[in-house]
Amino acid sequence: MTDQRLLVVERRVAAKPATVFRFFTEAQLWMRWQGTDAQIEARVGGIFRVNVRGDGYASGRFVEVVDGRRVVFTWGWERPESPVQPGSTTVEIDLIEEDTGTLIRLTHTGLPAEAFDEHNAGWTHYVARLAELAEGREPGPDPYVAD
Image 1: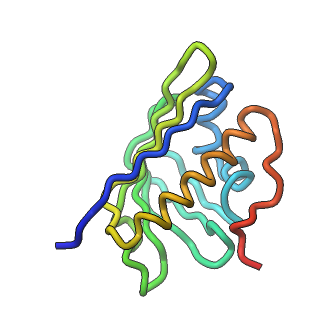
Image 2: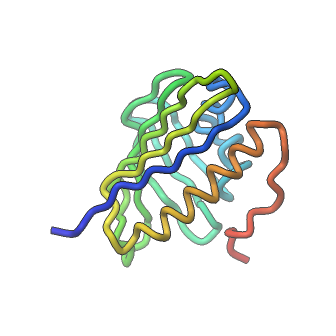
């Protein structure tokens, strides 16, 4: 059995949970903070598929959607050599209302140890970009996007 890791990224955002929620459930908004192409069907059983950096898709299915509060989907890379295959891990996004806005808590479970650092760097980078947008600022071009 592969050593699996739990990844948690938290970020406070000066925006209401309903605003932040849309960035996780609408393809056009998702692509403003992550990806060059996206298919987002934010309903239980719906497709999750994002070309994150322009060089390959991460895909899975939505397993839970609670309006304005929580989104859960499976995740993996559509590359045969990837240790994280489509649907093999789970991403949970909880939006916790606070006096000053929202705490985004992204929890990625089931990651093989060899994929942890890359996913930790990626989610930290992308949640920061999402926070910029949710607060009304433009994050600029994504330096992670492949040429």
